[in-house]
Length: 92
Image 1 (spheres, rainbow, N blue to C red):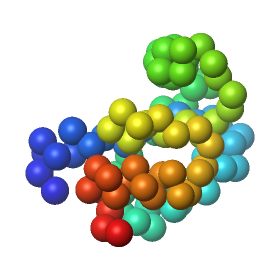
Image 2: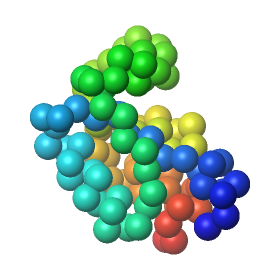
Image 3: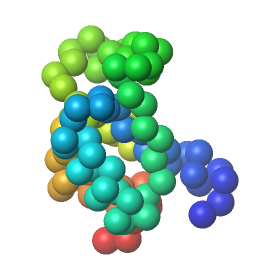
């Protein structure tokens, strides 16, 4: 994958230390060899503010995953898979 593609199709997971679904989603992405950036909203206040801005202040829980601008609430595997495929981060 080229650097420009990696930048264009960035996957960001907003998570917390205690979130079991966050851990499960990261393991799932690892198994698909999808690179991602994890932002812990408990320890990183800037990440928390960034997340709230993306959600228009309507925070409902973690994980929240941003795949190239598609924001997906929770570990919703079908939606995550579709967004990864749409952005050519995994093959169908």
